[in-house]
Structures are given as C-alpha cells and as structure tokens.
Image (cartoon, rainbow, N blue to C red; front, side, top):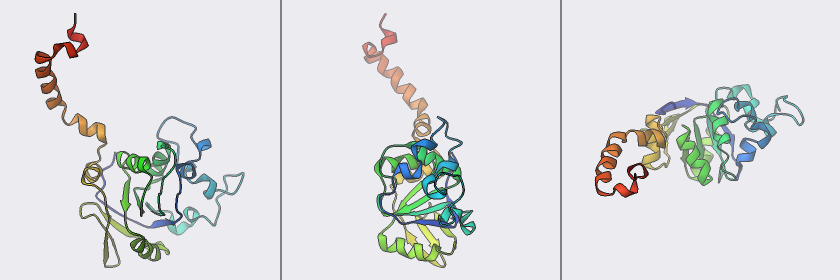
Length: 205
C-alpha cells in the first residue's frame, strides 16, 4: 500500500448526503474476488447512460477537466450502507486517495484507512468553501503531516485520529502493524508457555 503524505489534485464534488456503498460500487459490478478490475464499476449508475457503457456527459467524472481528480468532496454520511469493501478497492484503483466529508459510514471509514484512502472530516461551512474553490478543477493540496487542506493561500484543518493517520503516513494496514511486533509476540508466547502450557494445544501430549 502506497504511503500518503501530500496529495495535490483536483477534487470532484458529490455533495449529496448518504451516498451508500451500493452507489459507489453497484453489486453487479463485483465480478471478481480480487482488488483489481473494479475501477470501471465505481459510480456506474451515474457515470454511464442507462443500459450502456457510454459516459454520461453530465456526470462530473466524465468532465475532462477532472480526469486527474484524486479527491472527492462528499456529503454527510458518505459511504453508509453495507460493509462492501469492493467500494473502497474500486476508488483506490481508480486513483482516489482522499475523501473529504462532514461524516462517514463507520465501516467505510475503517475500510478507507486500511486500504490507503484518507477519509478527512471537516465542518459543513469549510466544505462549502472548498466546493466553491474546486468547481473549475482548481487543485487542492492535502498535507497529512500537518492535517491541513491548502488552497490559494488558505489552509483548513481536518480531523482524523492519530492511529489512523500514522497507518496512512507509513502505508501500513493493521496486519502490517501487528507484524512489526513479531519478536515481542514470540517472546511473550515463549514465556507464557512456561507458566500456562495447558493453554497451548501443541503442548498437550
């Protein structure tokens, strides 16, 4: 997973409350069990004209000014609904690395963290300011080390807990973090076996 420190890119505006994971990744688009081959499916019901794969010119992802967008401005409760991790995999594969919203669905938020996408929380007023700035594809700079969104000489703070922030900065998921403590875990287990051998099945005859 690629570490995140600074992202500079245009942002697409999807300021609609309660965009759920079925909108982000419709179930019919999940044709594989791998994390790849999913980017064409994200927002499929909005990106394509009905019954086809022809781009809908009215959807912002099909606007050539936003071809290099890596940031989404979302509405309240972004990513609500089922735990569908395919939604986050598809967004990551497409190139989105930051989602800025007033709030997120709980599971979606956690899935973003362990898959290398920053879910940045800001207040409604600040989101409106960003939205006005981004309408013409002017780029934002997201700095994770300072937890700020920078644009045109302005700077807005965003919220994220420190544990999640460190995982993103180092490009680690929770398994990677656990493996960093392998030596300490092995030391604990070896000591524990001496005191509680009955806990370990392999130690019982």
